[in-house]
Length: 90
Image (spheres, rainbow, N blue to C red):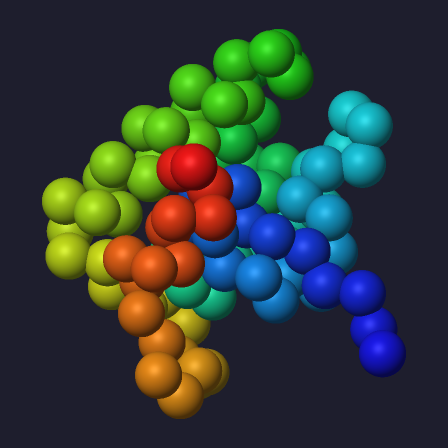
């Protein structure tokens, strides 16, 4: 079984790569919320500010009504973005 990673913005549990590896963003885009790791969450190179950036991105996604981002990939069966968020807001 291939290891998967959690999106720190929306809690999507199926990222292929860890969002960050030391000082390098993965360049992966979360299919759920659309966060582009290493771009949207660069935080001016300040790793300590990333959690603040994630909270801001999370609120923007929530305010937009939790849209599924990936146009060519449908959401998983039974996808519930509110339940998904619980994993990162606990």
